[in-house]
Image (tube, rainbow over all chains, first blue to last red; front, side):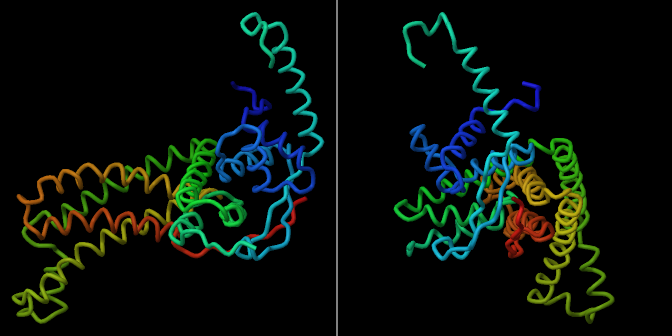
Length: 111
Length: 211
């Protein structure tokens, strides 16, 4: 709570999906990737809301692709993690791993 | 290639009420993903996408959203007072003006002329108030005009829902004239805000290179 540099659970999922997809990351594959890994139905609009927040903080950048017929002539918007975004995700991973270690309540369970 | 077209009304709702700056991409993505999914899935995606963009805009502009809520309350109060002024007395002052100054005096006695003029003189000023309210919200929406107009519409619907439902419950005890007025006023209020706020206008896609 409070610190604007903390990224939410869903924003982190979106960032990780972005990193997995590389240069081909736009709304459809990002939401499909999160659905595949989490098993939950994801709204494309929620993915964009998270991406817009991340972009406003300089953690991702975007570019507009070419319009295609299967999208009703609408262009894709491709997203990519920035250097700042990569640094942020590494820091979050480090913090989570530290917090995850030696949890008495989760002894015997695998993370 | 995707040949299945998604539900037209759902697409229309998303195109007009989706407040995301990337709304064109959201619409395109949903159209691309629709193949192999049911219309129900598409409708769910549309409502969740509109909601997600709306809440994101409100969360990032809380002071502006609070201002819009306050302004919407003022709009409802003005609307209620105007309605009481126009429909609460023995005669609508605008109707009286039209029949004494504009139309031949004797015409007021013809029901086929009197009632349409009276309804127009009641609904038009109220519609113009809502139209102006929607325009003002959009004008001062600070780049988040769609979300702010939706906020204004949501609060207006919430406030008008109770008296409208109460009227519908006791519909048999109310004269038809007032029932029609009671149904038209909420409808035209929402329509006025949406029209004034520009939400019913066709959007042109914004294509910018940002990477």
